[in-house]
Length: 228
Image 1 (cartoon, rainbow, N blue to C red):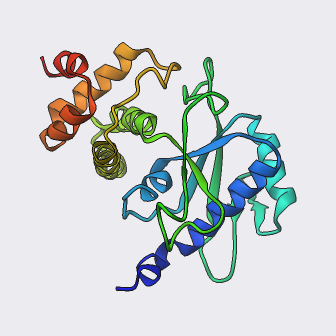
Image 2 (cartoon, rainbow, N blue to C red):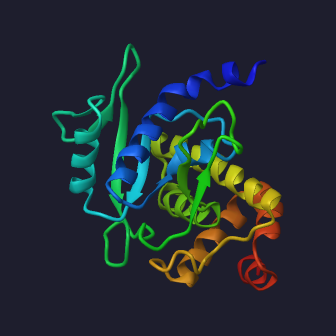
C-alpha cells in the first residue's frame, strides 16, 4: 500500500497538530504533544479523537493564540477548543499546564526534553513543520501515570482505556529499545522517582509481556528494584 494512502486516516488530526504547533511557536509558547497522538508519531497505529499538548504558558493564553491564529480553531459551548474542517469530526485540542505544584503533576513544558518528529522520521504524516512531542523517555512515564490510575477499575470505559494505555506504553518502550534509550526518571521531577518506580513495578507485575521491554529500557539497578 502506498505510504500516503496508508496514513490517510491521520491526515486531519495531523493537520490539527500542525496548525496547533505553528500557532504556539509563533507565540513563543514552548510545547510538547503527549497522549495517544504523540504515540502515533513514533509507531502507534491507534486513532485518537483529540490532541493533548503541554504548554509553558497559561492554557487560556495559549487557547487565545490558537483562536487568533487560524479560523479553523473555535470554542465549543463547553469552553473546549476544537479544530474543524469539512465533513470531519472536530478535533479537540486540550491545552495543559505542567510543573511542580500543578494538580495534574505533568512535566513542565519549559524544562522537559522534547523530540521533534520531522518528515524524515515520518514521511506521509509530517510535512515541512516538525511536530514536538515530549521525549519518549518521559512520555512513557506520563502514560504509566494515567494507566496506573485506572488499571484497577472495573468500569468498562476505564478498562478499555487501560488496555489502550498498555498498548501505547508498549509502542513507546519499543521505540526506546530501537533508539537505545532508557526511561528517564530524572526528566520528570514533578513526580518523585520512588513513585514512578512504583508505577513501573505495577506494570511489570500485571503485564508480563512488557517485561522484556522494561528490562531493555531500565538501568540494571532500577530493574532490580522493580522486579524484586
